[in-house]
Length: 301
Image (tube, rainbow, N blue to C red; front, side):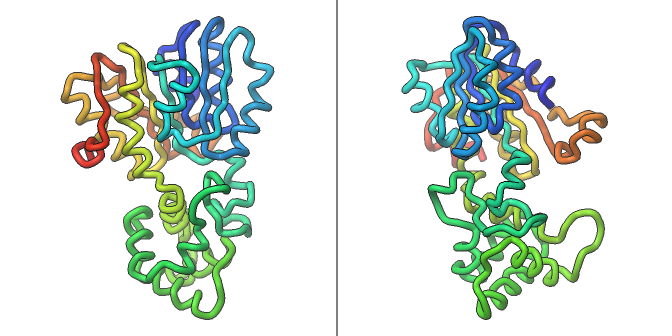
């Protein structure tokens, strides 16, 4: 939904923009063209390989635009822009999906290839999926798979993992996918039996939902008046958080919902990129001063 994002952000030459999940730079290329000349693009990604790739892809696209690429989490938006001399920006984009490169990069995000069971966006920090799978109590595993994967067979899967790890350590995606597939009674239909379990572990490893909950109000505070925030989510848990936070802050009069219902991909885009089928784009514009506080985490969600 690149064109929808660019239109929704209402970009013009000279704007200061944050692409908070820059990835390989797919959206950033279009953003750079829209804010040229005189604009500033600050690209952020937790994945150091992504920031390296973005630099490679965008270095010849800069023209008369200032480009800054930062390896960090978007939860640190305020510190990042301040360190580069800004207090407010004109537009922010959060694209919460995994890139095709990440899915095939040996990090364990996909069950379609046999890879180490890692799942960290930043492989230099945090606990791995293998550590969770091999060390967490059975009940805690079940809760993760249910809460973050909305998997009805969570307890059966957790028990199967617990039984398997008593015999041998689970270290690869293929091992885990096979365990989950057997626990669910084999493959049926188009969706792989391990899809929701892998999603749940990835979310837990990277603390994705907590990070998103804390970042959205902070991002709104950092916008200039009439500035815009666009968020693309890919599953119901993410979209629910975005929807509720936008709705609750809109009640204060600080923002206006540009998209009362999310924008979804066209049939043509889904045909060209089947992974986009679950994407939902929500956009707001800032109307007045809004002060982000840590307490919003509990009040807004």
